[in-house]
Image 1 (cartoon, rainbow, N blue to C red):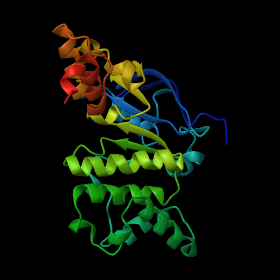
Image 2 (image 1 turned 45 degrees about the vertical axis):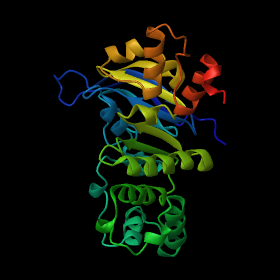
Image 3 (image 1 turned 60 degrees about the vertical axis):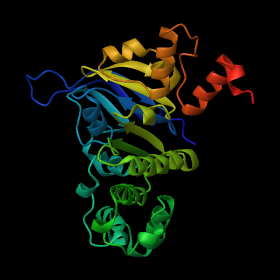
Length: 284
């Protein structure tokens, strides 16, 4: 396996207009191959702009962005970068173009010139990986929001990317759809080794990542594991963000003199804390 870091930003700044304040400001960041990194930030913090630079949709005003060693500013690499780092947007309807799921997954392959005879196995595998095989002949407009987003992901997977960049891909979905999409991407990361950059405002999703990056005013304010980041409750709140519900509960308990672990993330962990703090509560 290559030792080249998968995604590298070196002193990257991006401005939408020459005289405008930077949307991303002097960011240096390395995402290793196979990592699942979540990016948080309030509206206007720069997270979506950062995402679009990671597959060359936006080119940095200053600094450089490397995807698998390829500089996004070099035009000769544009299509290789788009194939290597697939982008999934917030609204799946914006990425679905065909009248049949199978044809929609084939669309990207046609665009990058994959020979016709090579398409069927790649399409079938992408549908299998996203759990959408049984919907291959279904019109996309008849699918649920979560299913549509999984079709959009299948279309990217068919192009055999090394990374997935998901820009608030669950923001328009109901809780079940969010779970379907997140679980699909987490499984692809775990089983296929695909690098994931997951832009989100759902704290419970970020809590399941390997790494959490918090953006503010175009820069990276915090960078660490979910436990490291979310245990800093007051700092997170100062950035106009929240923490996972169980972390919030642990913080409230501590404020009332109950010494709960400050880095609790899940319901299961909170249940263990309750047992530790009050063993008699669990006696028959």
